[in-house]
Image (cartoon, rainbow, N blue to C red; front, side):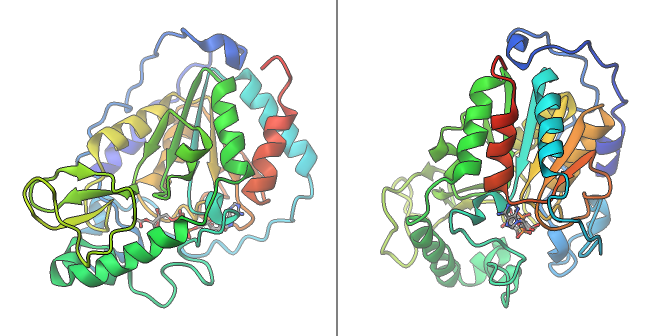
Length: 321
Ligand code: OAD
């Protein structure tokens, strides 16, 4: 069962505090649970049942509304300082981001009012079945998204995370976003769990291409075999790229601090990575103006926009970090 992989890792012994920067050659630790094969994990979300997947295989936490009301930024400065302090002491830092981190760049989120899924059933555009049935209308949706993204630039949250990577020697940014904005901001050790919208992948031969512009063809064709290209994103019901989920699990299990920024924590297996980190001794910090299923278990919540909170945390890091 997939759930075993997420719960078996024992809380590890804490090492003495070290400066983030000094961790360059830190030996890799015993990471039980971090090397579990990811091949069983499928992306699902609340649509799994709809598209006939056996949800019990991989659903660990699905929740639509926690009902928590967070007092907005009551202790903002204090919380920011606490997170900066944890980061300063951390050997290894992992960050998980979701659509909220790009919201201030003008990219629509999925589940909020005006979000990409509002008024739309994800299985109409984001499943292999949908593509098989009507590739042209699936491409229309993704080309529209690509065209919209051409106007979007990284915001202060993306930039602060890229800067954090430069400061912390062992840093891994795991994103559910397919918009490429983390890369554009300069993040390098980046795991794109759900793929990248700017990649085309051949439906037949699996060849990947990165087109320079939004194609005018109704269905772009593979330059090698002439097959239909599809967007290089992970759809509901599909396996996540094994190297991506393996890397993400490993980074989460090794982290001393994990920041979870701008995600509703509703889609698995991404949502469970914070629990992997926490079970292995990491401090889990959620940055999100709204409550999520993670809010109750996070060690600290900053109920603020990513574009404010992440740069503030960076700013609060001691200068020698
Ligand atoms: P959601 O749309 O589910 O959630 C966005 C989250 O961002 C919400 O919890 C918001 O409160 C929060 N948010 C909004 N603005 C914010 C801001 N300025 N700063 C911080 N947080 C903010 O998006 P995801 O959690 O990313 O998958 O969704 C996960 C996956 O579900 C996506 O990758 C996508 C979707 O179906 C695929 O398409 C495969």
